[in-house]
Picture 1 (cartoon, one colour):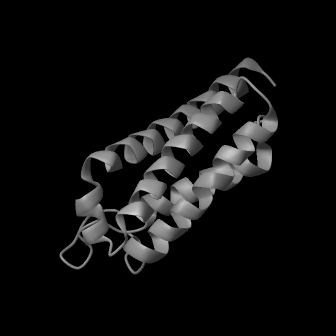
Picture 2: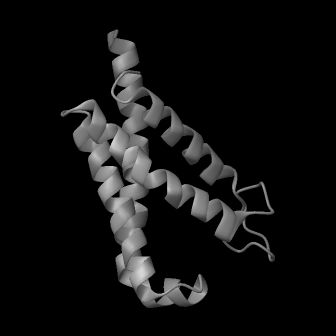
Length: 126
């Protein structure tokens, strides 16, 4: 892999890591509110937060370790994105919040899902 390809793949990897680590860690401070808003148990929200954080960490560590660590991180996060799309954002494409979709549409989540599928397919090979 050339240097530009390597740097570009790390940039993509760092974006995924930052998004999922941020969203996973911030869920811990508002478990009760999220559980009520999403009609989920607190256990489910805690599990979701852990999966997001652990998936992000695996994608990071996978860059230094084995290919399967990167792929496992992506594999953990793909169901999170599918769930977010169908449970929260389905029905509106634009990411901008509206009265009907205060959490915004699915545009951003679909893009994240596509990037995760790419990372799953490619592993550490950009």
